[in-house]
Length: 348
Ligand code: NAP
Ligand code: G4F
Image (spheres, helix red, strand yellow):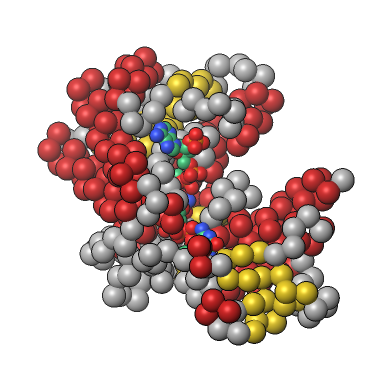
């Protein structure tokens, strides 16, 4: 029997890598997409259109929305999936301060809509919830693990804490196989251009070929535990293959500042950055050309930021035998190479 999986958020960074991973494993993948005035299927284009030439044996797409339970129920009923990966969310932390109500609706309540639909249909399905290290907020511990208390610092994180607990509650109350993957930041060439890592590699590459003059950033001293998205989607699958539903932290165990990410990316592109000034007046100048190419713009500061994240994924490493393959340096290299290729194409 072919295993089936339903992915919400299949058009996103993680959804697209997970779809590829599962199809390689022999799954039939169903994906939920939102209606938009311009088709935004770039990340699954190769898979859906080019590789399989609209062949629906491997992948099938349905219109739905996490804000609309009738569409979700209809899709669940029609697909009866063995596994559900709930990846759809308004996933931008900074933007969640601008659209808090919408974020809580989709990122928080959307999860109840999925879980309740599954409960009512009564299928034997394994459910994965995309929980986040943002839930820890500015946790006062050196490394965050499954025991670390949550202290959310944004509407996004607050919605994710709700989603985490409602997943646990459905597991305990209704005996459902519902697990949380508490994933630390993971990046790739498919990362949205307004997340800091991609913004850096995308903008510096464009500056290199003359398509852009400056890169504007916010908090340079914030620290994140950054991994590679392809390594992290494998962990999602392993979480649902475990013998019982449970919650797992997935992280690399290394933390770096945004500033370090800039410096390492710039070096690969032969920029020689010197930092001058402080706070909002800080600037990064390329000593090779004397041009200031990095400036701070207050609009990229958040009303409240998480300054430090560092994950302890010993539980997943022990029980799931998961470990990341790509380290910080290699991740930057992968992203810079992909964005430089793109910038050169755009330039020509
Ligand atoms: P992403 O690239 O922003 O993708 C989000 C996906 O959700 C997109 O496919 C988006 O569709 C879809 N979506 C948004 N609102 C929706 C709605 N109302 N109904 C249906 N679909 C909707 O995010 P990602 O980086 O792949 O992350 C995947 C999940 O993991 C998210 O839940 C995120 O919060 C969580 N997470 C991510 C990280 C990370 O570092 N990447 C870490 C921890 C947790 P469109 O393409 O139409 O916008
Ligand atoms: O890249 P970011 O926007 O990612 P953030 O806020 O850590 O959230 C991402 O990871 C979470 C897991 O921990 C996910 F749950 C979430 O869905 C998302 O995928 O920002 C990282 C850091 C922040 O401290 C931010 O203030 O970079 C800082 N930063 C500095 N300048 C900037 C910028 N962030 C963005 N987006 N843009 C800037 O110009």
